[in-house]
Every structure is written in structure tokens, then in C-alpha cells.
Image 1: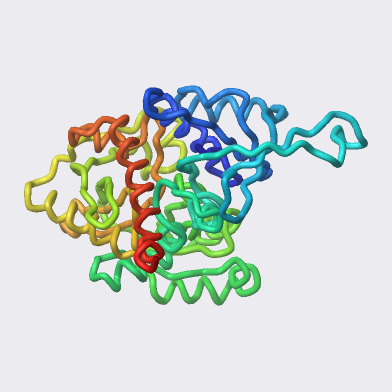
Image 2 (image 1 turned 180 degrees about the vertical axis):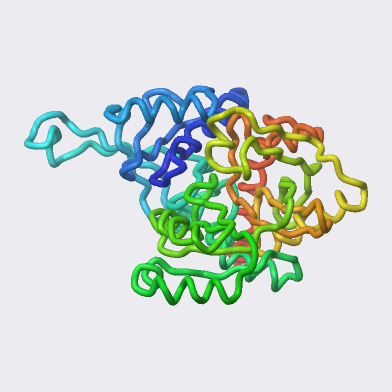
Length: 379
């Protein structure tokens, strides 16, 4: 299992990994916990992540900023071979606490389970390394992961598939910093009403602002560009209900019952998701039969639009005032924290989290075998 990571969602990943680790069937699996630190170092964890709420993990890591990194360094060679991981056992001494030489010990793995959120984990980068190493891994491939991480590209693919999305514009960090007046003028000429300003490639609602008038745009763009080089400004759905649906599968994806989030704040931001413990989840969501069926159908369409595999969570916005339904985004590595929707939706659909994990591992192995089918046929 890979968890942690270099992104701003490091703490959420740790909480997700703890949940997955605690539900792995020890009769079937021998899990190995590899933690990616915030500086990018990979380490074989001294102890596996322990079950805790996302709020607890975030609070612990914020209060212990000087926490010493634990575990032995590990490296994944970017090529096929018997050893999926190489342990680097550095001897003490030397100017920087370790000698230049190291003892290398190989460690074989059958399947990789990335429990990573955000950049450098959910955006196709880790998936690319796993492809180079030719390792089976849980979840979407390089293309789907990259497309699912970039909200602007995602919307283009959804619209091409015939799915309805909110109107949006893209603003780059460079454009904003060098031509602020021109950017504001362009946005004013095309956007009417409230908008959301978001980093294009980040999750957990980090860096997102709701803006109700033009005066609030500069601060919102300043915040978003702290997190990403590209931002999107998208029209807000009036009186929006937030509906989510989980997807599981490869070539024949299945959907869960939809659920609804009733946020404790104006929208489901980082604090509402993980810290204040006041948001409510309605599972199943109170929807009529036809609308539920349509949400599940569109979830599969969104999944296939990005060439998804393994798992995803598709988020919708449903206007109370107009009844219009919009696909908001797809999350290709949804959270597994104690409050995350993905596992809760499947549990309500009759599939407990342990069974979900079993299915994900089986899907990873099947997809890896399918990718090599042309090689087998050619022999």
C-alpha cells in the first residue's frame, strides 16, 4: 500500500490508508505499508497507519510539525523485475548522518494499492511509474487519472460525452499575475451570478472559494493560484444539492445507490469535510426513482468518458430551484476515511468495505492481465 504523498491532501491520505489497512483480510493478504513523506521520500513504515478520523490525523500532523520521519527508505525501480521495491538500509555516520553506500534488499509485491489523493499520486504520476515497473495496481490508469485530476480537461471530456456541466473559464497563474485587469474584464463579460474559483488540479476542496460579486474575485484567484498553476472559474448552480455516486469495475462498471451531502457550511469545503464534524450524509439520497436511475447512468458515462478503471466517485450538483442536474467532477481515488462517501455508498448498496477492497484488488489483477493479453496471443 502506498499512502501519504507530497500533496496538500497528505493527511487525508494517511486517514484513508488507516481505514483500508484495518479492513484488509489478513487470511488473504500480507500488506506492506509504504509511506510517501511530504518531501517525496518513500519509507517502509515502522508501523502501519492506525485507524483514526481525518480530523484527528490532520490535528496530530499540524501540531507535530517537527515529527521525525520513520522507517527505512525504499525505492521502486522504474523497470520490470522480480523486486518491486528496493530497501535502502543506510548505515549511520558521515557528514549527513549516513554513509554514501547502502545495503539494497529486494522486496517482491503482487499488487500495489495506491491510497493517495491529489497531485503526485492521483494525477497519473504514480500510475506512470507503476506502468514502467509493470506492476498491477488498484484504480485508474495514467490517462484517466490525469484527466480526472484536471477539472478543465475533465469538463471537456464530459461535454464531449453529452453530459451537462456548468459553464467555466480557465485562468493560468501567469495570466493572472501579469494581466489582472484583462482577466477580470474577461470574466465579467462572460460570467453572471455567483461563481466558484478552484485550483484545476487539487481535491478535498483545498483552495476553493465561492464568489458572489466581482469584488471578491481577486482574493479568490490569489488563493487558488497558491495551489496550482491553472484555475477554473465556474458558474454556481442555484440552490445546489450535492449528490454523489460510487462506481466500481473495469469494462462493465457498476454503480452504488446515490448519496447526498448536506454541508455544515455554505458549500462542502475542507473544514466541512474533515474538521467540524457537522456535515450530514443522507444515504440513500432522497430522490425519485427516475432521477436516481439517471444519476447512476450518468455516473457510468462519466467513468467511461475518462477511460476509468477500478473505482471512482462521481459528484453531481442538482438545483433545487430548477431541477437541473450537472456533473460536477469525478474523483478517481476517492477517500476511504471514516467519513468518506465511497465506502458508505457501497455499504448501503450491500457491499461492505472489506468486500470492496477484495473487488478492487481483483480488478487490478484482471486489468493488468488484460493489458498483457496481446503479448500472450502473439506467442
